[in-house]
Image (cartoon, rainbow, N blue to C red; front, side, top):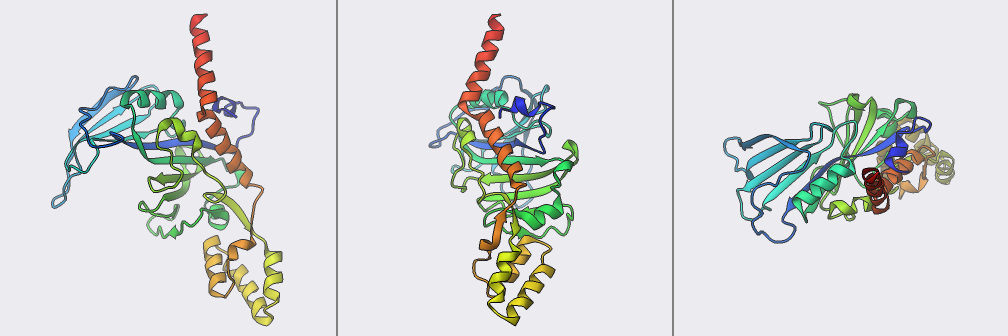
Amino acid sequence: MPQQELADPKLKNDCVVRLDRLRFVLPRDGFSSVGKPPAVPGFRIVADTFVRTPKGKRPMYRRVRRMENPLTGTKIQIQYSRAHGFLKDLRVTVIGHDSTGIQWPELEKVGDAFGDFLVRMVEIAFDFSRESGVDLDFVRRHGKFGKSRSIPMKMYPGYLRFGTRKSPKMIRCYWKEEVKAFRVELEFHSSFPTLPQTDCLLYLLSVDNQEFSFVRVDWKTLDVYLNKKGTRGKEIAAEARARYTSLQRLLRYLRKSGVNNPHRFLRVMKKDELIRRAIDAWCRSMSPGIRNRKVEVEDEGTEN
């Protein structure tokens, strides 16, 4: 389902996927000089300044250029004039507008302007509508993000975070007022096994059930297993229900109670279909077939 179909009011879309951020470095191979940042069609320079670093810290890049597309609100931040020889010449971050994300026409212009670069980070945003029923408590109890563990966010009670910036992926969950939706951001880092290396291969980014899914506890099967342990098993079952304020807390308790591989008692929920439909629609909108079809339609319109 291409992105233009997602805008059809006749279709009910309780979840929409957007490309929120993209970071890459140049040159792709080696450390040859790239020179100054290139111009990007449709983007204007809003600032080009020296980087101020706190006292006692050494800068990574000495200058940063900020660009913006006045029509879409997409921003580009270019770090250049490297301070260390081991760094790439340019480090570029593209940030999409909250309501649209980074669209393919803009991404194509960025790719053409910078040439052959190496992707280092991709951030995909899943926006769930109020009607979907997905909120902070729902994700806490049913969200599964592979091996990523939750990180305490005492200073931000309305946020959930899984993983760190040094792990293959990091997840942030919170209500996004700008789009009136509950947002689940998956930030994939360079160590993520299937991270595409170029912008043209983003549609191959794999977000399967192992990386992000909604699951439920099969209490019936778990009870059958625990009943074999006699009275102790029944105590574990009762305590497990009492501790089920979050999925990770429940799994941690079951492991400590001697239940090996508690993930076998998890089942994918029907609501998980929201994730699958949304990511499939986004991948298809970024695939070569859809992109080329859009170009052909635009060319035909120009000729007429």
